[in-house]
Length: 109
Image: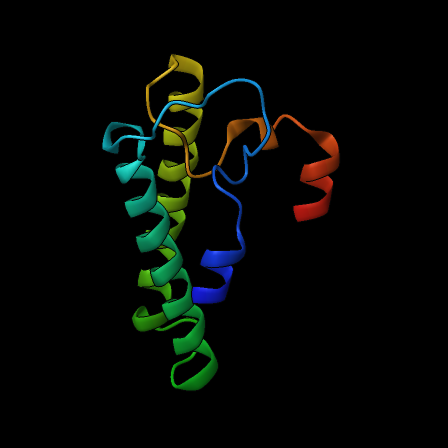
């Protein structure tokens, strides 16, 4: 990490661009999107791990995290869509333009 820090040019990745980029601020961070993504992914992986190791697929220890994660995934994508369509100040964790690109959606589906 230290070598990488010394090797990167000043202003990376905008080095050499004619337009100056504004400094990022804390108001541009999508805290709600990051929280929804973190909790949804954690519950999703927990449910799958419980099913793989200890419990049957029909047990509450498997179904509860997976069902809650499904609702959180829906909430995450609704929040990302709302942030992109309403023009909020924050930069989304998952840029909504990815969902509008058929090639990209084909790659992740």
